[in-house]
Image (cartoon, rainbow, N blue to C red; front, side, top):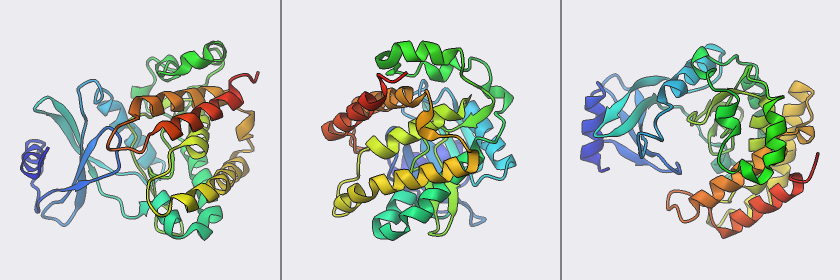
Length: 292
């Protein structure tokens, strides 16, 4: 999609861009364009690659409303629809920078902001899910691609999984914004569900310990503080909930789904998934797959 096409799409969704939309980079499977309206408001247009990928737009918007009502820092959905066969969502733009980007430049803040990351996720898990998300749970998210690697554990989880919390399932330092002192935004709710907090925690654990690092001069620094960020996040979450992260029976499930995501996205120009990341995800899965 080019600038003219994105401008026309925004207009067809009922908004009038005041300036020329600018591309925003960072998503693995959605295209994003930032623009302003005449009232000075900043927005982002998210373009989904297919009708199948955008099938959960209504649920995503319901999750955003529930999170906002609970006081969480999330974008507001301004418009949505299908334009030229592609689902699209317009969201308000949140101030701040991705936590990972901030820590690249200021790694000494990893402990404090890592604990904030854990505490924010604990707050999220206190939010009841909206009614739109309840049908089909927990099977809708437990059956995520990749769980065949831990099929026996998954069958056991299905009988014990809770559905009483709003869970994000893609909660990591690229989807969380900061101003350097606190968390200012939680983005990308396309995978959210009515589910079990332990599953959300397991996914975040896998992303923090086995997620790919961005290329560039800061990659060695990020590799050094990966464990520190994981420990700080875990400490913040455990202090807020009294739940032990690594005692969760969902850890193998989270590792398996993350491995599937990595394998599916190797070679995707919009992401950083590579063979090294796949190996790391397999090692993380190996740590949990044989545990009871």
